[in-house]
Picture 1 (tube, rainbow, N blue to C red):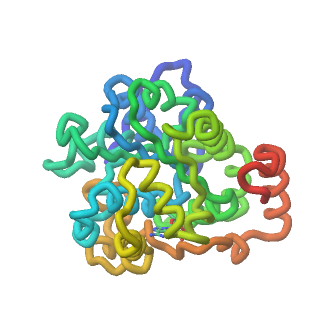
Picture 2: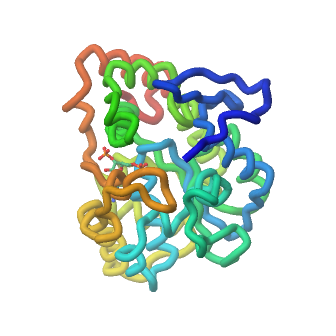
Length: 311
Ligand code: A3P
């Protein structure tokens, strides 16, 4: 697929990321050309409805899990759709699947912002600093999932190494750590991304729900119940909660045929099975050296001041 690198405002800074890939800096955050195209369309066109639910996240922080959970909580009677559709089909990513270059990824019947006015759920990787104005333009609700920086980085590094480009030239972990610490990765810097939504969730908890991947892992049922209450559709009984948790577990999801394919799909530019890797907390310990951990922990304590992730 040919990506149009040209045509962005000349005031938008650009820098070489890896190989020939150029990133663009937009309002302080880094974008691939593909994501920037979609983002600019989104900012011009997207008008959230008051009933919309938006899942915001930094890449590799549990987006796919939260998409499954939000879909199941909101559409309890059609939870079986998860067995036939990838979570990214059920909850499209605004800047890629809805406003991105639809000519390349979206199947013909893909939900568009003009259809199904109730129960709309969308995902976005846009930071609050860019998406906030749109989020605040209606009574839509925003759920943000955050994940500890080291697992996020390792998950992202693995993901990049599943791409065709990486098969020719694998991405060294040392470079991934440097780029993460410099904030030079798609939608980075990570820390400002997390802080943007965390601040809003403290000031306006009825509109912004902030949850961490680690909290969800440690007590999924309790947090799924809180999520359902936030969304205004609390559960009637424990069986319902258990069904949602079970249907959205990584073990269940990765066993559905639709999620097993290693092909790049029509609706997402990554292999469908690449979203279900390990799903463990603390996996970074298997990859990062002591020095790498100390370096990232130093930045984490300076940026988060012990408020979100201590290390
Ligand atoms: P790992 O690479 O650490 O295994 P995203 O959806 O934002 O791309 O995040 C992907 C990460 O979430 C991957 O982490 C993936 O394995 C994990 N994940 C995907 N589905 C999950 C689920 N249902 N439960 C827990 N973790 C899940």
